Picture 1 (tube, rainbow, N blue to C red):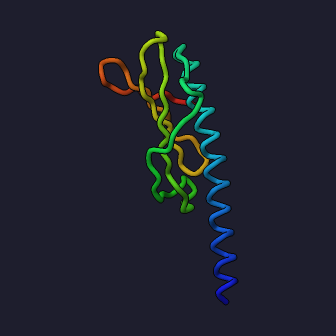
Picture 2 (cartoon, rainbow, N blue to C red):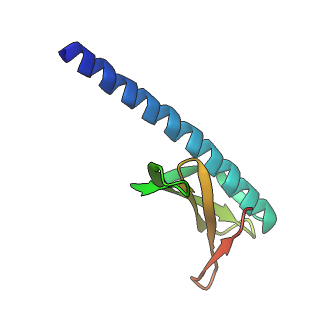
Length: 109
């Protein structure tokens, strides 16, 4: 019985790891596309997980909502921040910070 629980726990951990890697890769693609749309450069070519919490998808399934942060540059010498909001593996929105401190949401559909 204990070995079955350990095997189940290992399976859940492996599933979560794979799901997280796929979602992160989609967030990187979304950040890169958002940067191309505003003629900016995605710095470090990566995103980092800022938040992870349970949520419901549009179909009502229980999933995770992840917020990935990234840095970009428009002029080449300053760093600005952005965020990609993912529900499951679906991109919800990309938010880009402006110089004035306000955020702009980019529709990625």
